[in-house]
Image (cartoon, rainbow, N blue to C red; front, side, top):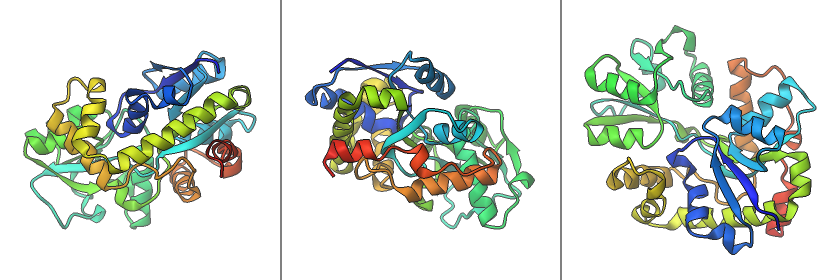
Length: 301
C-alpha cells in the first residue's frame, strides 16, 4: 500500500477518534502509513484534495454538498462517518436548567465565526421553533475564546462554542445551557476524497476505515481520562482535567458514530439546515455525495 497524505482541517477535541486512531497505532495495525498534515482551514483542505496535494481529509459532509450544489461535476465524496451529532454548546453565566431556544431573543448572543456549520444548524433549529434568527441580538465576528471572555465580563449573555471552551468556561464558573447534540443525528465529520483517489487508493482507504471502526469502538467505552491521556499531545495548552471533562461530555452525548456506516438521517438534517440557511439551492442526493460502498467493502457488510 502507498503512504497516504491526510489533511486535518484544524485542531478540535470533537475530532478525538481520528487522533486516537493515530496515537494507538490503529492505522499502522491495518498496514497503512498515514501522514497527517494540518491544513489550517477547511477550504484549504478541500483545495488540497482537488489539486492532488492530499489524498484524503476529514471535514463536514457539508463540503461535498456545498461544492456539488455549485458544480454537479465536483468529484468530492464523503465516507466513513465519525462525528454524527452537533458538537456545539451554548454557555452562559449561572445555571439555567430550564433554558430553551425560545429564550434567546432578548439575550446578547455570540455565535461561532470560525466555521459556518454550527450557525447553519442552530438557525434551522430556531426557525423550526418559530423564532426568527435574524431578529437576535447577535455578535458574528468574534472568536469563541473572545465570546467566552465577553460572557465572563458581562458584555454577552451567551456564547456558542465547542469543547474545550465549554469545559474551561465551566471551570471558570460559567454553565452550559444548551447542547446541540440533543437535536439528534447531524452529519458533522467524515473522511472525504475525490472519486479518482477513492478508486486509486481503495486498499489504503479501506484500511483506514477499519482503523476508524476500531477507534470508534474504543472511544465509546474507554474512560474519558484515558481518552484524554491518549489525545493530550494534540492539546498541550488544555489542562488534562478540562480535556477529560470535555471528552466525557461528548462521550455521554454519543457524539461519535457507533461505526463508520453513514446514517442517512444525519445527512438529511444537515442538508435541510443548509437549505434553510440559503447556502445551497438544490438537494444533492445522498448517493451522489456519500460513498457507502467503500465502507461496506472495507467492513465486509
